[in-house]
Length: 606
Image (cartoon, rainbow, N blue to C red):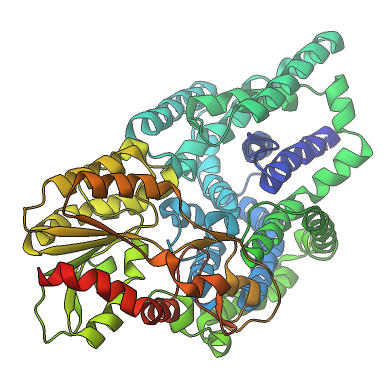
């Protein structure tokens, strides 16, 4: 096969689409299509190479996989090692296991399956995970195991029809899952959903190679049309689209069209020096850009970059990419197998060992869980058990329910219960209060995992509500979705005449996580935080308390401790920007002791 500089230029376009999208998805909503363009290029080139070797009777499975290993793995594993090293310094101890699992799954090319389930509610968000972008490499490596078998063992006469059939079938199946199974997150990362994109490149390589015979004028028209289609798709398709599936075929066919047309103004431009150079670096650029962005987002607990941070991302990405391309990627790709494995095997051992022992290595600098995570009453939060706290010698008919904000109210009530001699039972869950009637169609996709878990506890929560006289509920937001409001009112309406319910106006949130800014539970800087009070719940709770005589509202956000948030005497009392830690919960109880008990005592003694 002859080297084509315009394909390097198309790689540059693919990377730039992804890069801009990752900087800010609002700038180029469909920039993630750059990954799909990479898939099409891979399918086109690998198919061309394999079939050419098949015709010459020089194809070898061992040779094919050896070349893929040398091309992809060395710089990839070096990036993983750097992520492991930097992560051990930047990541909080509560998130180290998330980082460890992501690196190990990425190293064996199954990170796409790992990211099916999303991330821990209390851990790093997806945009802060420096391994998220490795899902595409996992898919690509998995496809490479499949492609040679397809091309070698199926007669070339039937190959185009077979590939076309696979494209249509898998695209329709993927679209069906997206629409009727509501599985967008799972489907986005799946190999079966991405195979058609590779195969579009394969199909064009096999069946439409003669497009290059078209006269230059007509090629110009078709090529420009393909560019327009890619550009429009990059702005029109977005994260809410039913993508991939049938919709993905549009930009993929446009990209494959550009690959098949070799003599036109677009290919001339893509073959220029700058696009070609970016294309040569594109693999290293792709590997480095996301970890740089993710670590900055994690450290500063924000999605949007400042101008300075954008400059740092661009410069750091280019420098790291240049170095890894020059000294690792180009060197080991052409190294003799003996030398390659002498370098590769020890380096792999270092990566795996260091990553495996990350929790032990970082333990010395770990922030105590008292400040860094939710741990008190966790059995009645994750496992659906009912726990009893406060003065456990008492058998008061009091129940605490709700979401993660209710979880962080457990130390508050436990302190007051022990001091004022009352007990309470509790069953809570992540994401949404486990009350019946919340409509799944209203839940954002990123919250579906937590919504589904809360549904598993809905019946148990309802049964426990019936058993208790006083119900306390706390939530990060009672008005997040319309059906949550109606479900809560229905729950209130179904209470017995002698039952009472207390709605807690929860503690405020912050605009940044102080533990990440500090990397310590003791103040290290003068960073200023915005305190965000939830005003949207006020009207709903006030109306509810006026409408029902057995509804009471208590506002914990009025506490004086929030005047200096997120610190009390230079000690952090939030474990992230949305939740107070155990120290904060107990300090809250001490500050509101008299106020809360004056409110609470008449209700539990009636």
